[in-house]
Length: 113
Length: 115
Image 1 (cartoon, helix red, strand yellow):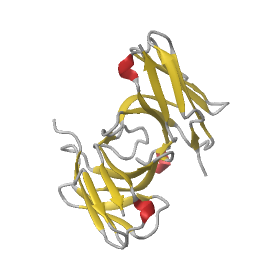
Image 2 (image 1 turned 90 degrees about the horizontal axis):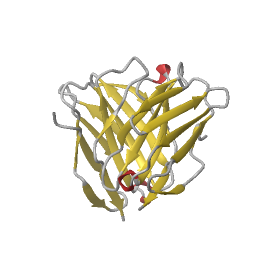
Image 3 (image 1 turned 90 degrees about the vertical axis):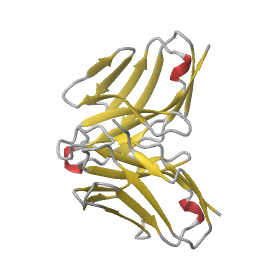
Image 4 (image 1 turned 60 degrees about the horizontal axis):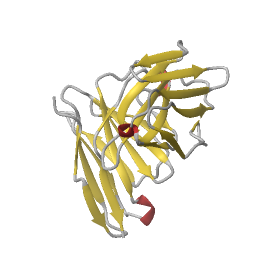
């Protein structure tokens, strides 16, 4: 039962262009969403989050959009840089679950210079 | 401020053996969670400990267990290892627990290979 899905295993983008990573969820109880970035041989690093009471959150080059009716969120990276090449994980949580995060399978982003 | 420290970083075991992994959270963090990452599966939640008590458990067999000490350090144990237990085991810590809007800080993980 995959409650959080990242349907694109990989994405390739040219440096300077926009990267859009997508994530869908099924559990209506989720009320907080996070994106993590992971480099090989390192643990996931928190990138940006959004509460279900918002539909957009920005932090520098990173913007997360949440569409609650569609149970869909996306991460936009503008402009994309070669250093952004990593695996991106979408995660969701609910107040009732405490600190349990439900992760998607991840999307490998390659930014070509 | 030191991050989340996991030891050992790499280990190789054979089927049937057991393994213990250790995690030292960020100083002051009382919540420690464990996740298993396998190729194509994302991160799967194992369990969470807060103030030495298991607060939440994922859908893993009883061979997977854990504990937390009074200094918030945590260990997880896997007994009777199977080939499918080969994975990266990640520990994460957090200061809060009850808001449901907490950012977890992850360690670099312990890479377990079962032969």
